[in-house]
Image (cartoon, rainbow, N blue to C red; front, side, top):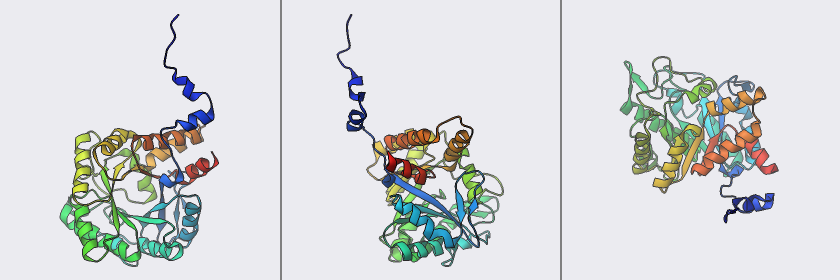
Length: 326
């Protein structure tokens, strides 16, 4: 009988041996935690489609950010739900808007102890629910750019560290970068949702942020999930326009694109493990079909293994807890 000369099982004989050769490492420092803040809300409100996720009143923001920071998570991503919406999304760039108030409050209370990121999009703020300004039945790319730049500037004035354009308008990074630089905010970074795909995985987020489109869909501006080359071109375009961090979104079904982005480009790569990914796990776990902790760990490790330097995830808080305990 012949025996294999290479026995890879020798490297799995004990927990310490497995720890010694572990190729991919994950820690709370890899996470960005999404936070929903809603104007005129009096108490925390549960999001029905996203178990354990809540919309917060402004008064609860400091408490929530404190919990996130104490878990070793270095950054948050703010999403705002305004009390007023119109066709121009004017609440998005109001210096007294809900996102701007939240940024200012967090900055005042936490200083540089946490990185404040904020979504730059119009879907939560427009009466149409679209990510840009609607003219007739069409999303006007160039008019939308002007509003996105005004939104990013208002967030910068409030004290944001990173603006995160997610509207998928052509030229959004270049337009925002110029506006920030011209106004003296050269240190404010841009993390673009560079390859944001048209995905059914966003459905629970649209419930949480009250931003479902009132007509049509987003096929004319979000990347088709069939087109990997097009997605990489979007990433390249953002890099050419001066982006600081690129993002692939969603994450789990797009690991190939995370890996390809990491292989091709020497920029920080983020991945957004989106609401539908979270909801599927929570739903199956509630039925006892899966072990939630084990599945969550496997998903997050797979995203990191594919090449993500940082992960925006609704599992940030529970994952940070179990990683600290392990």
